[in-house]
Image (cartoon, rainbow, N blue to C red; front, side, top):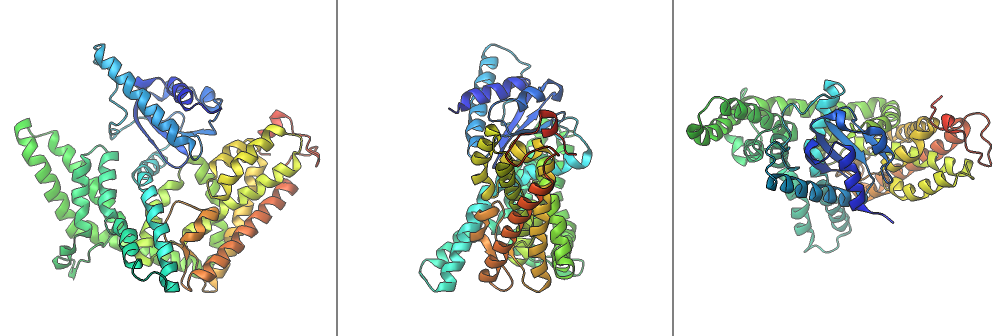
Length: 480
């Protein structure tokens, strides 16, 4: 029987105790911790905990513990409760050197990371991960509203659904600004205030570089840049102004300087970058669709394994703002389908490995709905070869979807978050939802079949019998 309290206690103990944790959050499958001293984390024992599917970022200040959907929310709540109790007890005992509570904002230099690029991508991901639930909810409502509108049903309700679905996207720049300042050590509300300039209708009266700005120009990229600049300005001011002036001048200077820079530089530059992203994505699919799909579908699982896939959220969001859908997500979703096919092959081949088959049965529903971590860390990655053959399946599915893009049939998702079967309500394209649904389904079937066949043919060391003699432990962790 699952014991979330015991899991939370064990995680805290193996990550250096409450005093070593400065920030706690979670995404769909991962408990995300910021630790003061990475050397205090016992990675091996953490991986061995029942219910822990994997550990990412060991040795760095940003630690991710993969727990799976559903479980992660409950365990995170327990971790936060136990941290709060520990900090309250320490404060009552007069320990003035304890770490800040778990809701504290990470500092601008949280500790050593495994490479500056990986660290930067993780921090950008941390900005957008908390926005995913709203993106999913609003995207599904938008998809349902589109179906009702096309069918001519409930005409009195569809305007209300459109307002509910579109409200968040209209103001997403504000939320991005708030989260950016929070992640990088600034005052969140100041980050949101500066980012709000991007979507304010009055910017249409402002001229920059000889042209009038458009509300929303630069989108989430402009909001991200504006809030980063505001955070730097705020820190500069706080280090130089006395307390009496700091209260008045720091917010004023932060909003004024960062706001002017946003209007007369960042919005224009971010708009150019956003346009280039949209143009590049369209060109890539129209010109090299099958090859692009093959690469994207084949390489996405390693990104998920490293925890860097969330860094693509700004690109997805930019495409949704520009075109109404992101053409990249359906291609990337094929990676999960390839892994489902590979896991089914493992299930068939290793018939007497009851532990592994139980893991597959429990993880497969999440895999079909596009949550790949349980299968990655519980099945394909420990076995080695099936992880590679799952990538082959994803590449085949991506090539299938990309091939139709070359023929002029683009498939896109109106929101980000789900994939697998859960992506169907969000699908649309330049030819409407019906062709998009058919092409996406064909891509899933291609990825399932290819992942299954490739794993059966190449996913097991020689000597593994079809009736399921499981490989020795050394073989099960070998990718060769």
